Structures are given as C-alpha cells and as structure tokens.
Image 1 (cartoon, helix red, strand yellow):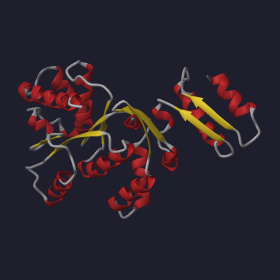
Image 2 (cartoon, rainbow, N blue to C red):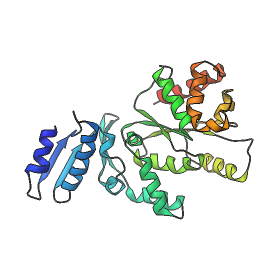
Image 3 (cartoon, rainbow, N blue to C red):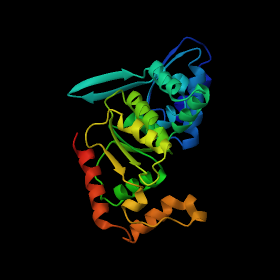
Image 4 (cartoon, rainbow, N blue to C red):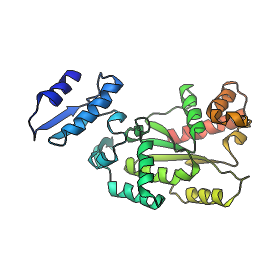
Length: 266
C-alpha cells in the first residue's frame, strides 16, 4: 500500500485527477498512516480524492473536513449513506460556550484517533470520567460485558455530557444508540451540580439508557476514596479494588447486567 501511495503522491504531479483509494491504512505503520493522511489531504487541494477507510486516524481532529465525511452502512437490509451536518455541530458549540472558538478546539481535541472510533460504532456509552471508561473496558476484557460495535467515550466532566451527547448524535447520524453514566453527587447538592444534573435529565435519552450514581461511583460500589495525594490514580485505584473483589459484588453484577441489556437490545 505504501508503494501505491508513493506513486499517487509523488509520481503524479499533474492536477485535476480523480483518485479512488480503498483502505489506504492497510499494512501501514501507525506513523505512516498519519503521514499518508496529511499527504492525501494536501493532494486533495488540486485533485478529487475519495477514500474508503476503517481507520479512526484518517478522520481524527479534522473539523474542517467533517462535511466531506460520509458514513455508509447497512440497516434494514438497505445501504444507508449519510454526511455530517457541520452547521448543526457548529450550533452545538455556539450554544455551549460564549467563547465558541476555544470550545471548538476543545472538542476537536476530544476527537483524537481514539475517540474517533465513534464514527464506526452502533452504540456509545458516555461516561463522566476515565474511571467508568476503564472499568467498563476491563469488564469487557474479562468477558463479563458482551457486545460489539460499541465505544466508551469519557468526556472528562459531568458538565460536558450534554454537549458530548449532542455531538455523538450528529457524528452517529441519529442512528447511534447512547447510554450515559454519571455521578448525581447528591451529597454536594450545590447549585452548580443541580444545574448539571438538570441539563442531563433534559436530554432525550431512551428510557433506561442511563445510570446515575446517587453520590458517586466509589460510594455506589463501596470502594474507598484514594488518598488525596493519589487522586490522579483514581482509575487504577478503582480497578485494584475490582481485581481483588474488594467492592460490593451485588452492585457490580447489577451494573454489568444493565450494560449488557443495553448492548443486546438492538
């Protein structure tokens, strides 16, 4: 594949050609994939380049090119083809923050190669933070969660969940099934948390497709908080207790069952 790309990128110097390339990422080193993406984007300035890809790297962090991305998939025995509505995505950021440009940069950063797996899945689980994401992925690795074509998207803060939800809807062309996990933080009870909780409850989430821990995830599973100086190790701390079965096992199994119901119901 690298030899073919070299011919396209270096051998053809004339303009106004049409190139059709199927999965240019095949057999490439990750760095070569990134380099090929940059070179093909440059080539497209004077040529028409069509790429069929299963690589998140080819669509990551390119907000200016999202309007040129088409998702083709099978549904109800028919081939579906949808494009991203960049105007709708723009409106999400404009409504989210007065400083639109900074917010746009933030979400483009979120859509790195890892999070761009959203484009290729049928279901997404949005989590408040990395602890939930690490826990779910470990449960999947251990065979306790069974499913396919799903992705766990950590949006780093409960305040980001509504915007992440809308973003996933647009990137999934409204066919993406969404599950949300967050801390209700009942003990905190301050105005800010009440507002965030209200914003999440107002989302159009299908009934049952969410888990709101009464206080927080650690309290729910009877896992003690890490020492303050080790708070940055919170995901590892939680997984340590899971691996040692040092948690509320009944609550763990209820959590697993609810995730599996979501993954299997469609």
